[in-house]
Amino acid sequence: MKNFDFRNPTHILFGKGRIADLKDQVPADAKVLILYGGGSAERTGVLAQVRAALKSRTIVEFGGIEPNPRYATALKAVEVIANNDITFLLAVGGGSVIDATKFIAAATLYDGDAWDILTSRGSVVKRAMPFGTVLTLPATGSEMNSGSVITNPEKGAKLPFMSAVTYPVFSILDPELTYTLPPRQIANGVADAFVHVIEQYLTYPSAARVQDGFAETLLRTLIELGPKALETPNDYDIRANLMWTATLALNGLIGAGVPQDWASHMIGHEITALNDTDHARTLAVVLPALMNDQRGPKREKLLQYAANVWEIRDGSDDARIDAVIAATREFFEKMGIKTRLGDYDIAAPEIDRIVAALQDHDMTALGEHSAIAPDDARRILETAL
Ligand code: NZQ
Ligand code: ZN
Image: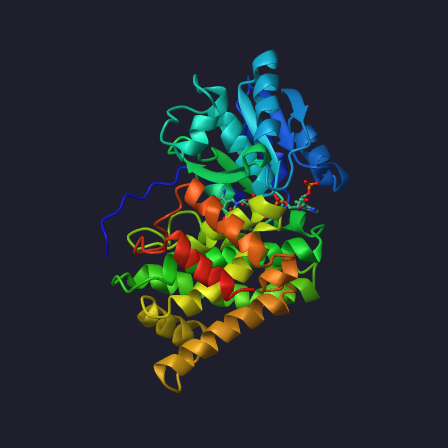
């Protein structure tokens, strides 16, 4: 096992009716900016619950944060904060609203050009405004991690950053808030959480028994409950398990002390930057192709994944690896997520653009061995057509 530091300061308030607890979590003298997305939080009544819980606080609201949140929109929120003496931020939404809030929290207290935050991947961030979240979409883990991904269409860029100061102070996880999600977003959430686990698990053995065991349990839970969440949308226990699984998939726990990959994510981000394909769908396209391409370096973990997650134990090494890649692809398809680039209107000329963007964004040494260069990404994408 590798050396590691593990610290996760986010207070989780999990369960039915927990939005009412906001009154105790937000500082009594805070002037709060509530941030939300394109209107689902208003339609579903979540915002009404939030306003009721914070009725004794001074509140300002900022709506309109897009899926794949935009840099320019985030900067508008920074202005609202300055003009209204805001002291606390509350994100109400999915990963996009929470990611935007993290960037806004950091940009508000950053003296230089806010774009530096992204080009430095967060290393310039020393301070951030405190913020909490009310999660409405289990997927990204953003509710309990310090990462954020911001899109800037003018620059053709979708870039991640992280910082020790951009963990939420608290996150409210009420599984009942997920009942209003359309099937497409449930499917996206399951696939995204699944690939988060894979990025931290499917590398090479590092004698990390607990991390591997946790990761395998999270994967099996998603495989079992993902399709059931689509079939029986109002089953509380299924939603509760999915919500907690998605949080645990990317809150640092299973990634401590182990090698990590993240190549599928970095290649996937360039696909979203190109044509706004949903984040999770880019992963479902890239991952099976990457597993096949990287079957040499990933051999031992592919065989462990086949046996412990999918019960695939018979046949030659290559036959078991073929079978587990097929099973992974079928799982995404069963969730209603297509797994070929062509399904998202991407053909050979777009691959050139994706590869050029990886180069431009210094994504030139991806994967657990830093061995996936843009030409390797091209080979992977060509098999995903
Ligand atoms: O915008 P509104 O109207 O709120 O609608 C949203 C949005 O259209 C809707 N929605 C959310 N909760 C709902 C709901 N509709 C009905 N009922 C509810 N309860 O769902 C749509 C998608 O929301 P979004 O927040 O974009 O989805 P998700 O949570 O999947 O977040 C995706 C973003 O997170 C980034 C992705 O790149 C992408 O930009 N990621 C963030 C990560 C992190 N911070 O650690 C890691 C991930 O790998 C990922 O990159
Ligand atoms: Zn993801």
